[in-house]
Length: 640
Image (cartoon, rainbow, N blue to C red; front, side, top):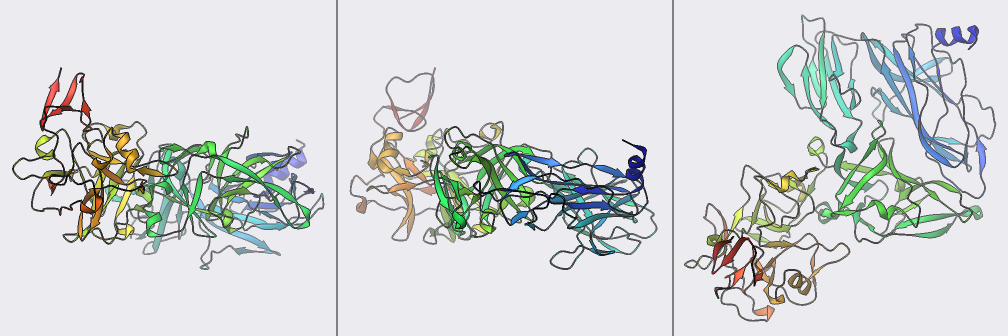
């Protein structure tokens, strides 16, 4: 580097950005475009500013972080050099990019963003006319039609840093890469009201805000976020620190389309198909239709549908996105293979686009083998499609289902209003993920290892045991009856729990192994009564489903060809209801719950065969039992 350029770079505070974007492709008639945006820091020079955006070059795709240059010089911010790159795109490209700011001096902190307007700078404000105080700024999309190989700068932004006030806000030591913090008044003084906030940049790794602490004050801790405080008198400095949860690499979430409000749902295990789409101007592109996924309207039933809950993980892009996705499951099924077609196994990624997200991948788009970036869209059918459209239907709200976001969005159940008894509403649930019950929900199950509860000779009743109050945790594969106070899922919340090592299926928690209740789950359908019976090696008329009949909420004999819906519960027993020998479903008796016990809810349901036969803990007859625990004549026995 020559001396002239060397001193120019030291004395002038500037950076140059090629504004990158999410790109729309024709893949038939392409041109080369050039575009430049400048960014710098203000006169204090006590900070660093850099940018990120997707880059497409020679039909390849990568996430690019442009030069990060520390600024410590106090001269004014004048652009000294233009750096640009090229990309292939059709006419009228909507480009997106994000700017990032970091302080480079302990006495200074980020204040706000500005945009150059002639010879002056305007403070950038949000829709409520408040200054943008987040160190991440998602610049507005820019429509590009310029074909010049040496374009002029279309926009110049700068990050402004200022001397810290009395109250400072920082991230806990060692967690600097997990999120960022903001201070509504960085130049605060004693008596000022200040609002501080913290935001995770790695939500897909299960990272969320945990709590605030104050340096030197071991008794203070607050989980409120944002937090509004008054700067105290008589101090020269007070530091609030944001603490985040440690990364778990995985989290649960739901995907809601911005344009239509519909939720992604796993509906089958089928893969994907290609179809050709024509556009105006004679352009054609190939769309990838994801047949395994469906789009459900935003209703109370979809809010409580486990098929809309996705288990996701991957590599963080440190900008609230994930690239690539390495884990994507729903209903216990791996969804990722459904995003591929044939041998096209290119990875899928999620990137931030303003306040929303895009789900995209690189795909072969025509018979000539050309590739391009495509985006998951809702095109108005029941099945989502990867295509080149980039409107609101290609944007997604991602609702994270963890403790840090429980007040924003939740997974919850919606009991049928007819399932009402003794002032409570009832429903059943069977999921492939463990969850914690909130809002006073109670859960009941039937423990086959406790013969006194299975069938009581004197009362002719069995007892459904309540999940202990101090646990409130339901393991995966555990079929339960849920007792709720209402029918609104927002008041019947369940919190999915990341259980990477399957520890929740063991130890003190109740397990599915000893539970006489069973769950129906056949992705793409459900269980018929015959399938449920065959699965449990029983006669079909020994399968009962939870329902309401003539005002009585209980288990009723399952008849006909209707399926037992996915994620619902049935009772598989070895004998009909006591006193009900009829095979006619219309004659099946209903039995109301009897309250007043301390161990659970009572219901006249099953009498285990007392013919001297031996049954396993699932209620199936065993001819030659191996070592283990069994039931004989209504009593537990141990075979050694």
